[in-house]
Amino acid sequence: MGKAFLFGGFIAVVGQALHDMYSMWFQMNEEEAIRWMNGTLIVCAAIFTPNRLYRRLTQFAGAGMIVPMMSLANIWSASALEHRNEGATEHMLSVGGSIIVTLIVASYVAALFL
Amino acid sequence: MKRVGAQTIVFDKNIYIESVGTVVGPKERQGPLGPSFDRAYDDLYCGEQSWELAERRLMKEAITVCLAKGNVQTQNVDLFIAGDLLNQTVTANYVASELDLPFLGVFSACSTITEAMLVASTFIDGAFAHRVLVATSSHYGAAERQFRFPTTIGVQKGESASWTVTGGAAALLSTTRSPFRIRAATIGRVIDNGVTDPLDMGRAMAPAAFATIKQHLTDCGLSLEAYDVIVTGDLGKVGSSELKSLCYHTGMNLSERYDDCGVLIYDAEQQAFAGGSGCACCAVVAYSYFLEKMREKKIKTMLVVATGALFNSTMVKQNQSIPAIAHAIAIEAVT
Image (tube, rainbow over all chains, first blue to last red; front, side):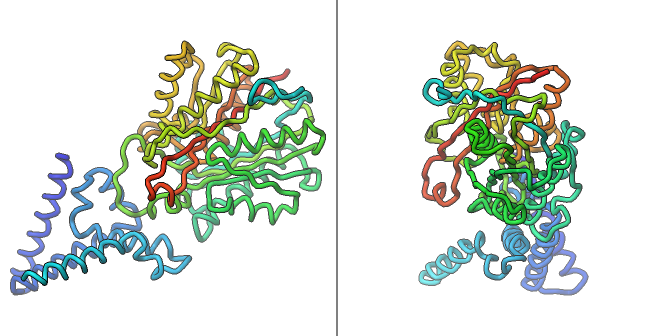
C-alpha cells in the first residue's frame, strides 16, 4: 500500500510539474495546461504499454498505477494491440468498455443534480 | 485383469517412451532448466504473427524433434493424441491437420499430457496401435489473453498466481525398448474444492493431486517409498505446500521425494509468482529434466502427477468454483 501511495503521488507530482512547465513556457491558461498535461501522461502510458513497462510498473505499484487515468490509455492500447490480428476496433473496448458505461451513467446522474 | 483397484491400470505389455522432443520460449530458456530442453526460442512470437500461431509452431517443432530423435517416419505412427489449453484445443487440431494421422484430441487442462500418455498406453497395451505420438503445448501470451487479460494491460497479481509456460512437448510411445518404461497409470477424479480465485489455481489443484497420489498407492498396494520421486505438474509454491500438508496429515511424508515442475522451471529472480503452469509445464520438465535424471540412473522410479485446473473464464465470471483433476503415470528406468 505504501508503494502505491508513493508512486501515485509521484505521478501527481510529475503531472503538476508538466502543468507548471506548460503554463510557464507556452503561456497557457489554467485549463489549457491541465488538458495538455493530461494528454501527455495519457500518450506516455500508451507508449509504455507495448514494451510491458506499464505492466511491470503496475505489478510494482498496484493501485498507484491503476487509479490514475493513464490506466485507461493502457487498457485500451493493450486491448487494441493484443487483438490487432482479429480486429482491433472490435475488441478495443472488451476490457475498458465498462469504464465508459460507468462514466456516461455517472455523468448523467451528476448532471441531474448540478 | 489390467485394472487394479478403483482407478488404476497396470499395463501387461512393456510400453516404452521411445523418444521425446521439447521446445520452449525465452523465459524458460533463461530458467534453471534452460540447457536441458531440445530447442528454445528467444522471441515469444517464435517468428510468427500471433501468440496462437507461435504455440502451433512450438507443438509442431516438438513433434519434428521427437520423430527425428527416434528416427521414426510419420507414416510409421499409428495414432496421434494431443491437446492444449486454447479453445476447442485448436493448436492440436491444426497440427493434426498437417500430420495426416488418425487423431484423438484430449483435454484435461494442464494434466493433458498424462491423459494423452495413459490413453496412448492403453491403446498400445490393447494392441490397437503399435506406436502412438502424444503432444501438448501452451503459450504465455495465448493463455493469458484467453483466460485473463491482454498481456500488456497493467494488472497486479498476487504471489499465488502462476506464469503459463511457453513450450511444446511430444513423445513417442511404443513397445520398442528404451530406458523408460510406463508401468501403470491412474485416472484422476474431478475434485471441486470450492476455490473460485483463478489466480490461485495451486490451491484448487492440490486436493486433486493428493487424491490421485493416495489412490494410486492404495490401488497398487505401494507406499511412498516405492517411488524415488513424485512429480506434480504445476501446483507452484502455494499448491505444493498445500499438497505436502495434506499428505502430512494422513501420515505420508512427501517432502523428501517430491518436486513440482512449476517450481523447478523458473528461478526466484524471474518473477514468475508461484511458478510455471500450463499444459507444457509438466511435459517439458518431465521429458527433459526428469527423463535425463533417469537416463543418468539418478532416479529409478517416478510418478508423474500432472494437475489440471478445469478453468473456464465464463464460469469464473459467474462465480462458479474451479474443479481440478490429476492423472498419474508411473515411469521406471530399465537397463
